[in-house]
Image (cartoon, rainbow, N blue to C red; front, side, top):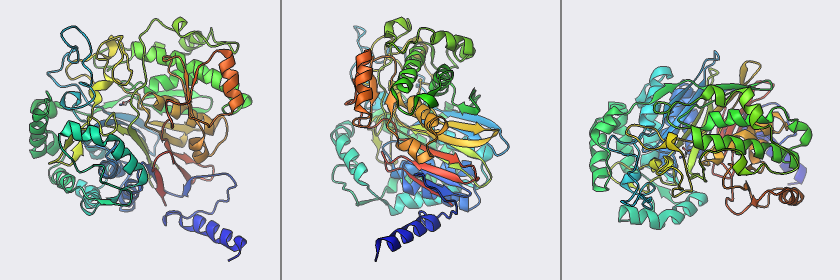
Amino acid sequence: MNRLLTLFILVLINFTSCKNETKTTISETKNRGLIARKVMVVSAREEASKIGVDILKQGGNAFDAMMATEMALAVAYPYAGNLGGGGFLVYRMADGKKGTLDYREKAPLASTKDMYLDENGAVIKNLSTVGGMAVGIPGTIAGIFKAQERFGKLDVATILKPVIELAKNGYIITRKQETRIAHYDSMIRAVNEKEILYNNNLKADDKIMNLALAETLQRISDNGRDEFYKGETAKKLVAFLKTKGSIITLEDLAKYEAKWRDPITFQYNDLTITSIAPPSSGGVCLTQIMKMIEPFDLKDFGHNSLKTIQVVVEAEKRAYADRSFYLGDPDFVDISLKTLTSDVYLQNRMKNFSFENPTPVDSISHGNVAGYESDETTHYSIVDQFGNAIAVTTTLNGGYGSKLFVDELGFFLNNEMDDFSSKPGEPNYYGLIGADANSIAPEKRMLSSMTPTIIEKDGEFYMSVGTPGGSTIITSVLQTILNVHEFELTMQEAINAPRFHNQWLPDEILMEPNAFDINIIKQLEALGYTINESRSPIIGIVDGILMLENGTLEGGADKRGDDTAVGF
Ligand code: GLY
């Protein structure tokens, strides 16, 4: 077959049946992601995106698809998808109403400020990161039910049916999954004191079934939300946790509630950006950084140019310095959100910025220091056929959370307690140091960096975006928005583009390795910046949906992971 004919057929296939779901007629020269006319789901696994789309096809909306996608991720992406973790939802209804749901984990009733310290006041290694004491009260089931009950259209049994089938019939292990499972295998075996379902015998292309999870989901489907918090599942979970030294009780589970919270909304040029408020730091930091960089002409400086990197890095430094000192659970600490996000305050913060040299970190704030957080979270974005859009980020915290796998129930438990500051001023396992605002207290939510974000332009939905990546979440979301808005990249190009990150301390710029112009790196170093290309082979795994001018949707799925966009 001659090459021209092959090319023609490939283009035809792409334009008529992307993932066998999508048809489009727009002609594009740019590198676009999947184009769909009506609906789009982008998540960390093709199976989860497909199940989300199936639910939409059955007449469900974004909130029904949320429940299905989130649970399908728990089946097919146990690294971060979960029943044993928590997350945040940002939504924009078709009529423009916006809101957020916080289903972040909470500290158990029996927790104390010093629970991870020994008798000398030193942090006990690993106690907040692996095993029973690391587990916070899971919020995911409460979250997906709260959102679906309020806004969904289908019944729960219909939504969970394909997920239960996926758990029963199995899914295929990818190469990336094989590598991840092998990487964590010895730790998972040690914590569970045995081999579990996920072990290093699993190879790419193997099929894996999780019958215990299928049964758990069936009970939740039959009995509703309370099955997880008060029913047989709750009892089994607490009995299991007790054998692992956890202090979580049935009372803790019974008292858990997901919470509707006011979003953080701000303007950046002609964009209206809506993100999550504390207990995630995402929305506050994103607001601060974007308002600090807004006066600069990034478009003129150029994408990933010296000047752009300098401005963004210096704004990030200042925002992260504030994050570690001021932010925590708003139900427990007073946060001056108005001041922290005000133009006057932020203009003042950038007053000592100079292109001549880096602002010394110790001149920026008297606050405490944040190190790198774990980066094993996951994000999905959905736009439905009714015009509703959601952005959801969910996590177990570390990869496979606390590594504790509840055999009988078929899921991993989080180690979210490590997102608290165990001891103000001292780094935890991931290098995290915080202030009193994020100290441990019974029923308090630990500070997060998750940044599910929805962007509007001219009053209409424009973009839904988010990512895993611990403290790099905020800066990855930021760069994706800037890549589309300032540098006119497509959704897919914006996601593909190399990313950098600064979080005040450590005093360095993380860069994805071998991805940036070496001359720019040299110039940054000559100015006095420390560049670290070895810390992180990838920064973030961004998934997003962009509304194009002709009204179609572009799904951007990050190939740094197995992420996939499905739509029609
Ligand atoms: N566990 C990561 C975060 O919440 O930011």
